[in-house]
Amino acid sequence: MDNKEYSTGELFGRFLPYYKKHKKVVAADLACASLTTVCELVLPMIIRHITNTAIEDLAALTVSVVGKMALLYLALRVVDCLANYYMADMGHVMGARIETDMRRDAYGHLQMLSNTYYNNTKVGQIMGRITNDLFDVTEFSHHCPEEFFIAGIKAVVAFMILATVNLPLTVLVFVIVPVMAFTCIKLNRRSRKAFAKQRRQIGELNAAIEDSLLGQKVVKAFTNEEVEVEKFEKGNQEFLEIKKETYRYMAAFQTATRAFDGLMYLTVILAGGIFVIKGKITPGDLVAYTMYVSTLIATIRRIIEFAEQFQRGLTGIERFLQIMDADIEIFDEPDAAEMPKPMGQISFEDVSFEYPDDHNRVFRNLNLSVKPGEKLAIVGPSGGGKTTLCNLIPRFYDVTGGKISIDGVDIRRFTLKSLRKNIGIVQQDVYLFSGTVMENILYGAPGASREEAMEAARKAGAHEFIMELKDGYDTYVGERGVKLSGGQKQRISIARVFLKNPPIMILDEATSALDNESEFAVAASLNELSVGRTTITIAHRLSSIKNADRILVLTDEGIVEEGSHETLMRQEGIYYQFYTMADRIK
Image (cartoon, rainbow, N blue to C red; front, top):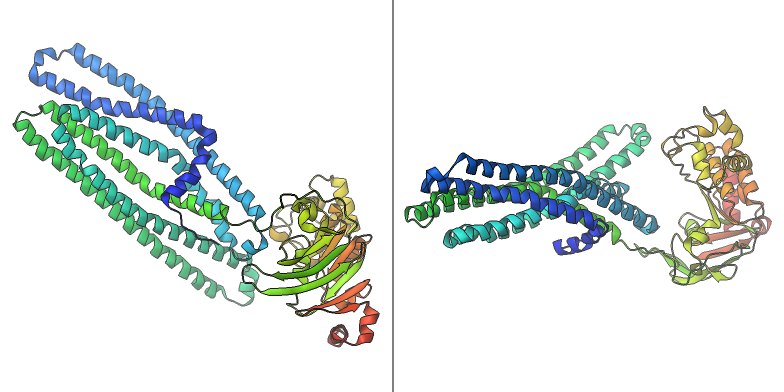
């Protein structure tokens, strides 16, 4: 997975568009933030007025004056509470909606990425990026504009008010702020890198846990529980070391800000005290200064507390963008059209292919023509490119040279959806989704009725065993269909393709992992499925393809033999050797 790093400016630039449809909520949230800030900024002025009045003319400080000041503050506090409620409620809802939009976009983009991306990316890493990483975006998207807006208002308004009281003292206090900001920014950059490392490592941990738990049968079969615990503990300790580094930067950040807090208070005490002695400011002014500095420091501390959340949010956005910026390698061409129902003629014309990640060449100038309705079988040694050849037809990968045509039209001229809709694939490694038998069959045609799904199951020879299950078609199959046998899973996958009813079929070693009884049942289903369709079968068990119209022998040198079973046996070449070897093994 791409671990590209982004500047803070880039992150904000790419994130801001998510606020677009929430502009009114953002505006109302910031307006409420302004109201809560007014309450804090007015209080020092109220205290200053009461203090100065008491010192200059105690008789002028009547109950009526104090009552009016109290009523003013009470009114402001009521407004503050209402504004804060809106911020806590609608502000967080807005953040959750932005998180939801980002997760939708990430998931949608993941659906368009090619096999190459998934071949090189751990599922645990992807899961972490679209779940945990985006949790932090909710708080970030709400608090980030709010906290910095409040801090800006307090700094500017406090400076303007205090400058009218005593400009030299105000400058002395505020000159510390840019130095503090510079120091904090430097420490924040280091902190964000540490948070990014932390996120990557938790993704690795997730991937390792997933790998180990899904392989529990293998772990137990080889009694490698201790090995798995040791592997996990190694990753766990690495995560601990990264967290320790993160906390060191956080500690340095907090210590630096506390030191600057102290420096600001020290300036007020020392310089403010001298100004009071010289009569430059009144005691009430000094109290106001102290309260404003306290307010500023409280704001800075809130930002410090938010800093960890801020870094987590930026890291979450960065890891989200790393998904969104992953290249979509297989896509619809600008002039792509819907594919009409094909006759089923497939042509490979001077096709060359190498895998885009490792540039491993598989084919060079391969030519092949499959007639409509023909049953073509492909055999050959492992690594010869049989599965790769079939993966090129539905464009799981794109050719690097030449072209593949269906009914004389380059498959790149068709939309991906319409192309793949007309191709059915049955693989050796069956994937059933966590859900019921019925839900898995209906995956072949989501709009189909229950009756149509049951008819597809009958054609696939699956209806009888399904009805014997505890809840029939509503039986829960478990994660990846773990509650069913290999033959049962395969027949459900065939039923799924029957329901799809595609004119072109690809059978990729669909029976090679089954026992003899299951193979016989599944083979009968596959024969039924291939009637009237162009069918390409990849097989290791050569007995299952004797009745194919044509058999190809594919090696790393290309197609080296071609013909019917009888023709190839008479040639006594590679196919003959494969077949007789299989007989000897029996």
